[in-house]
Amino acid sequence: MPAQPLIDIQNIQKTYWNGSVATPALRDVCLKIREGECVAFMGPSGSGKSTLMNILAFLDAPSSGSYHFAGVDITSFDEDYRAHLRNAAIGFVFQQFHLLPRTTAFDNVRLPLMYAGVGRHEQKKRAYEALKTVGLADRMYHRPNELSGGQQQRVSIARALVNNPKILFCDEPTGNLDSVTAKEVMEILKRLHNSGRTIIIVTHADDVASYAQHTIHMKDGKIV
Image 1 (cartoon, rainbow, N blue to C red):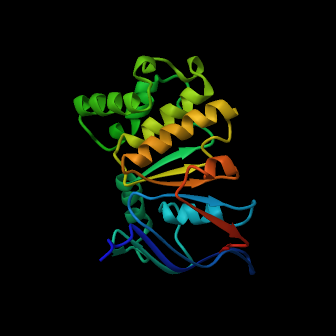
Image 2 (cartoon, rainbow, N blue to C red):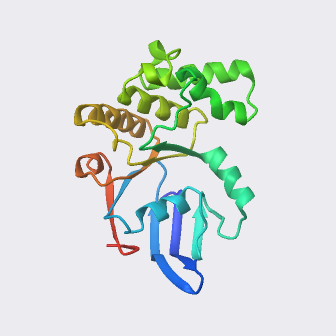
């Protein structure tokens, strides 16, 4: 008997309202993702892929439909519970690196642990291990302006990993990088996936999507 999906969404709809004007962003989306999978979402701007990622990552709630995460129906849970799930189970890597400019790579990476109330010794241990995982242990006391774009993105990957999340969400992770550096970053994500990490990528780039096991194409708020 196959293991239950990590993510199981059924008939998800998301509608945004501006006064009495409704704009549907997602239309009856059904999807299952198992632990350890690497999935890419592709589609033109306005296709709904970013809206879907926001719902899957507990940044937003659907207008209707059901969402089971690790077997638990979380559809009706409030923002406080979604925030708890985000902190406990999700790591984010964005196109913009979102690093604190006057803070070292090491302190940027351990920042989520500080917010989570993790002890100082454990913060240092886990931040070092995360930077080592992305090949930046020798740059951990450099500030962002002393690092290349690829190195800054590797710092952001380390920061996303430091809480040992169940899922790594990557929103256009190579969008600000040249092709050679983009390949280096994707090779890191590939190694993380091969080690058992669940990864979800939102991208416009075919070469980035080619690293995923499955590519899901979206158009007009639907999976096509």
